[in-house]
Image (cartoon, rainbow, N blue to C red):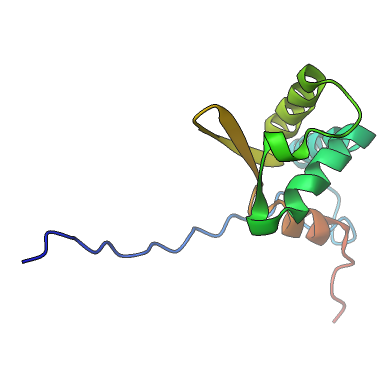
Length: 121
């Protein structure tokens, strides 16, 4: 007799994007603050390269050991990755001695929607 228990898979909750498209209505002060943090974090070329490296990495996540070759020292890479996490663009998980990074599931869609022209009737 097997003692393996099969657990049901849970669908991830859909997270609403941060803001409506900028062509739809003016952003509230809170929406503008949250959005500015994301774009400010991506405004640095090293952070943009790190974000791109994680987003384009096979499997949707990358070990810091695989993405740290961006022309700056390891402590600087860690600081930039921290800024990306604080802005809500990346999440991380420690596995043994390495840290793995993932782009937050709704970030790319939310940022794309923010800059997309609202549908016209």
